[in-house]
Image 1: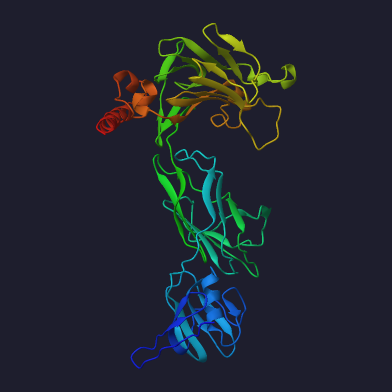
Image 2: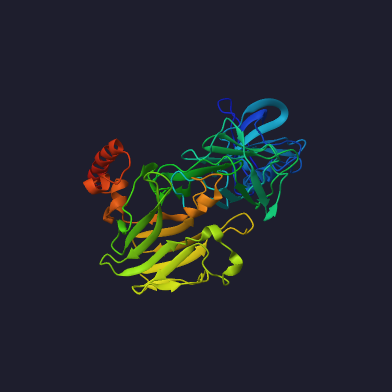
Length: 482
């Protein structure tokens, strides 16, 4: 074994010590220890007894321990080897006879990176202003964690409804199994609207290589305006902070519902269209969406009752209508898998589709350039005697269109008869891939195209129509100048 030499001079207390492991340690101070050490007396992962007069063994142990930084203390007469936790960049020297403070100079020992880390939401598409139902955080440790240590999830923009702090309701899984004790009932909170902190409680700890997952379901804020990119920094004790972890990007969703009201970019506009004819609402390079309403109870109240989808040249592909007998709906009178709230017809001949296609089947047009999918809206409640909401989803290269059946219960609260009498169709546009190519009434109301007089005349509030026209012209200039 190669001998260890210690060089001490009156000008420099530090000495280089060559050890068998190939590591080089430097004596920082005799009769001092690092008071910012992570443990003592061989009591945890930061402290081990390597035997007396075994500096080489202490140096090797520290170098091999991912929990440790470059700094450590060693008491040669007792054998305790105590390291400063990784992430620390110095030794806080404090007098203690019989101990000495050292550093390892061969290479800087940073904390290890998390083995796996990800952040996501449910639903996975972040429509502006809509509130996600779940926030999911998962990571896998490299180092173990002790009680009192923390996990911090910091978002680049606000994602929580309140902070200062606000307790969060999160289900925790460890190794794929529920663990309600790890953070306890009060260990997870939003310290502000962008930051979640989880603190390991009581006698709990997390081992090395542990897969941890949070699923948080409350205190979640509505998504920011379209185009907001959310990234995260995940800081876990004894690990390198993971910055720039991808989250999601908010997107615009065009909506048409109510009597009718359209919303885009957080702005709502109430408008009317003529009865007895199909009015073009939006046109993309692949298709045109048209609609006709039925009158409500008073004034100019109206509800969309039929929606037609054609090619830009006018060839009919699909027509969906709301059934007009929902007030006397009786499921037992219908065949199995029959449409309950919608009337659906496809093709130029308006061939009726009487039964709901299976979830794994779809209709196509023009060699799968346009796809039609059908389904029922999911609900957390048991199926009742009331008719179920149904959906037709249309997918093209430039946009996606969802047609949904809906009652008017929000408008006629306490009057189920009127709510069903004025059952109607809502429109949602979950994806607009080429907004600058869209034409028609809705793109003008949304500000994607210059407002024509014809479109402005459909807006119920005249003064608002003038403002919307000016705003649309301004936005169009901004779009075309990019």
